[in-house]
Picture 1: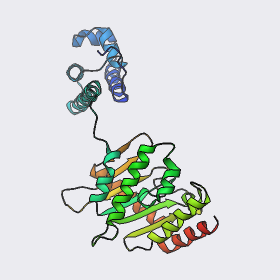
Picture 2: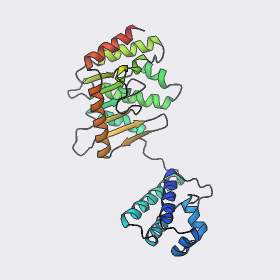
Picture 3: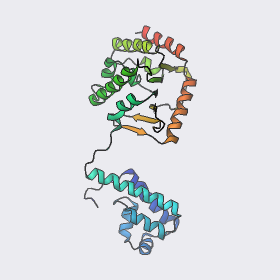
Length: 280
């Protein structure tokens, strides 16, 4: 066991599962340990995630407890994954960073479906707006968003331009990021780019009430090659993440379609953006 072991949430979940198996069979730690050949102390530490649960030990417990094979196999896979994550951390292996890669995917994609909750979508931001929103908080992220914006702008006038469909709540228009001058310039830019045939901007009005994916911004990217599935990009100030499971990306596509139906149409949205700009 590592000297300064700190259990991950996955390892804690595995421990709870092991304890659940034992409790379902009404076995004490001593009784269960005797059956599997572990000390009660070791079993207790595994269940409480005070030490890692080795995949072979999980397999042994599943067998001794007569847990259905698919169930114990699933927990063994979890233990194997937890072990791999821990080894990467010990070896200081830097994993693939989606936040750093995002601009590359923007450049390769054929369409972006973007839903934001607090800010204008990254590819439609002016640099002044981006800097005002993020520079003091996260200069690295600011630079990455600038790269994504540049990737989109390079594609805007291509023969096959990158199609951008953006949806966001009206609150984004009313949040005066960077002061009135910066915000007004951003809104005028939104009005300008929304007239491009490859760009659609829709605003969810304040009176709409609750709406799909509320509080959960995402970007759904599609690609020209059949071998490249849709990808969802999620980001917080801590990290970026790709979601590639087809079932999950389809859920995002469904949410986005619902948002588009609920939002004002592009013409009405343009009028609302113009109204917000005139108030600054």
